[in-house]
Image (cartoon, rainbow, N blue to C red):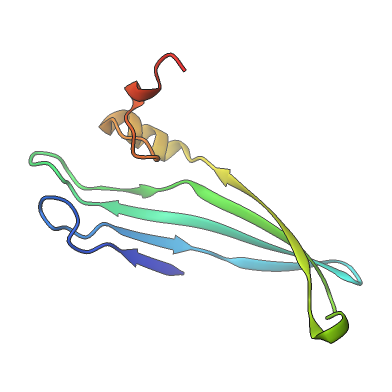
Length: 115
């Protein structure tokens, strides 16, 4: 787990917090090869930056990565591997964005109209 807190943010000097849950799970797929997966699931707490609004809490966009690696080190003790990752958008965040007018990239929904 990794916790990120941003102190003194916004007009009320609040501290939004993101807790990244990052399990790493290795699998042996062949005698000489491993597949190592990592999923990042951010839990986000966002304070209210405007009077009359409530703080928000929810699950952010996930990130899935898969690494293919040799089981044994090669010459010189190096273990090599390759990685593929993809972003997983979560429905709760889209609902939150619709309710608050925010987008994960910081824009507002109307900024994308007509695209």
